[in-house]
Amino acid sequence: MSANTDYYNIESCFTEEQILIRDATRDWVVKHVKPNIEKYFQKAETPSHLIKELASIGGFGLIFPEKYGGVNADYISFGLMMQELERGDSSIRVISSIQTSLVMYAIYKFGSEEQREKYLPKLSTGELLGAFGLTEPDFGSNPSSMHSYYKEQGDKIIINGSKMWIGNAETANIALVWIKDENKVVKGIIIETDKITNFTTTTLKDKWSFRSSKTGELVFSDSLVDKSQVLENSTSIQDAYECLNIGRYAVAWGSVGIATECYETALQYSKERIQFGKPIGSNQLIQKKLTDMVTEITKAQLMCYQLGKLMNEGKANYKQISMAKRNNVKMAQNIARESRQILGGMGITSEYPVMRHMINIETLITYQGTNEIHELITGRDITGFNAI
Image 1 (cartoon, rainbow, N blue to C red):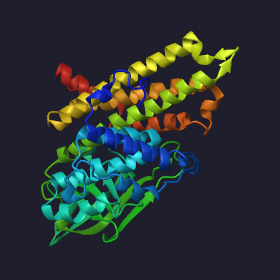
Image 2: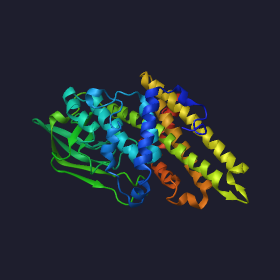
Image 3: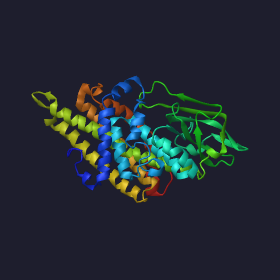
Image 4: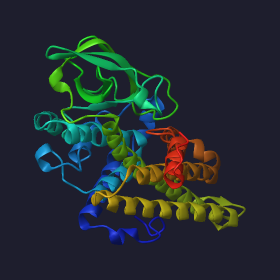
C-alpha cells in the first residue's frame, strides 16, 4: 500500500499475518482477476474458474478453525482480504463473502457439530458453493414479514415460498435459507439443491450492476427436505441478522477497496494526462478532488480498523457495523464518481476500472440493507426513537 493511500500509516498497526494475508490476496487479484475481469463484466459472465483458486488462498472460511477447513484468522485479516478482493471486482468479493459471512457462518454458529463437519470443509475448498436465502420478492428491508414457511411431516419438512435477489441462486450446491415454521419462528435450513424435490431456481438477466455475479430466485413448491437439515441452534430472525452483520462488515472493508482502486487510478492519470502544457494534477480543482478522496479513504480505513479490533474482541455491535457499511459505501460511491470525472472520456472505457466499480457500487448502496435503513438504525440508537 502506497503512502498516498495509507496516509496515516495504518499498516504499522497490522500484524505480520494480517499484512501477509492482504498482500497474498492483492497479488492473486493482480494476477488472476484484473487482467480479464472487464471481459467477464462486459459479457455478464461469472469467472467461475476462479472459485477453486479463490478457495486456495483462503477465500472461503478464513475466520473459522482449521478443523473445518478455515485458517483461524482474525477479523482484521478477513477485512483486508475483502478489501483486496473488491479492488478486483465486487463479484469476486461477493462470492467469497456469501460463502464465508453468510453460509459458512450460519452453519458454524447455528448448526450442529454433525452439520459443521459435513459441510464446512467442503465449502472451504470450494467443492460446494453456497447461496443465502433471506429476502423475498415483497420483503427486503423487513424480512421478518416473510411468507415462506414449512411444516413438519414425519421426518421430513414441506417448504413453500420463494427467495429473491439471491447470489449464486442457480449455481449453488447448497442454499442456506431462512423460513418460518408452523409457529412462525424463523429457522435456518440447509438445502442440498440436488436432493430437494419440487424446487426451481432462476437467474436474473440483463443486470446493469454486479454483472459478473449471478443473482436469482429460489422457488419452493411443496418441497421435501429431511428435518435434520434444519440448523439445530437457530431460533429466530435475529440469527439471520447476525450472519448479515458479518456480511455488512465485509462490505465496509470492500468499499474501501473500491475507493482505493478508483483513487489510485485517478491519481496516476492526473500525473500523466497533459492539458494546456502541464499535467492536470497540477491544477487546483483536480488537487482538491484528490485531497478529498484520500481524506475520506483515510477516515474509512480508521473506521474499519477500529471496528475490526472490536470484532476481534467480541465487542462490536450491529449498530457500529451498520454505520461503517453505510459510511464506507457512500464514500466509495462519491470517490468513484469523482474519479470518473478526472479521467474524462477515458473514464467510461474498459481501459480503466472506474466505471465498472461505479456501476457495482450502485448495488452496494442497497445491498444487505439500504442506505436509508442504516441511517435509521443509527438514528434510533442515538435518539431512542424508532422511526422504522
